[in-house]
Image 1 (cartoon, rainbow, N blue to C red):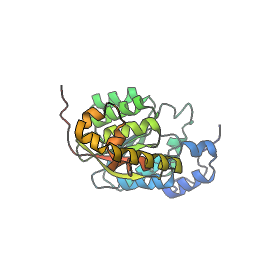
Image 2 (tube, rainbow, N blue to C red):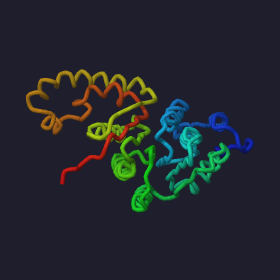
Image 3 (tube, rainbow, N blue to C red):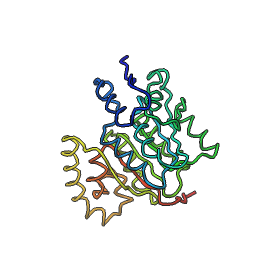
Image 4 (tube, helix red, strand yellow):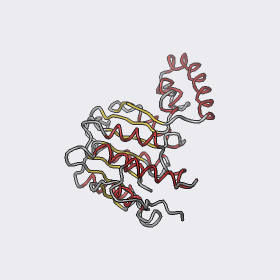
Length: 256
């Protein structure tokens, strides 16, 4: 196992910590790490006035945590929580150490799977102004994380999905885009050439489906075609990014 911890001085700035992490990175680190562009994206969202108390599913070597903590560090009583069951066993506490060296004492890790930690936080009455979902990139795990975080995010709060380019996560992101009480507010990270070519084909197909949609209605057409084909206006946003941020506009009265 490669050592991605920082050997530099304590109290180094967030930018210095990230630079040191990337300077010593190998391919295994880069596969799991968010980019600097995505980090700055998270930092900008966390810097918004209403964001003070934040949470993320996934921590690893702490890059996303450093950027989020940097965004809220100037606020009154900031707090950031990361859920990572592998922080000790796989990452040997490097995420915790790196965030600590960046000078953010208001950071903590819950070393439990998110399907256990999130219900516990909900039951204890926790609420958060911003959440990052960057855990196991399967559809069931992503929607489970969203399910619980949605109940802890008030109106005006933000939920960010990382790895929106992953096929399963992309399906969930499209599904969330249909929620009446969530709106897409920002994206980051351009997609590769293969995805762009595929999206171009999907755009052509979606355009051809327009008359059928008008005749049969979206509810019927949705039984046969992917949701992205029914929302071509999102293809150039959700399907061309690796990170997508949604703002919660209110509570959703679900049908019983």
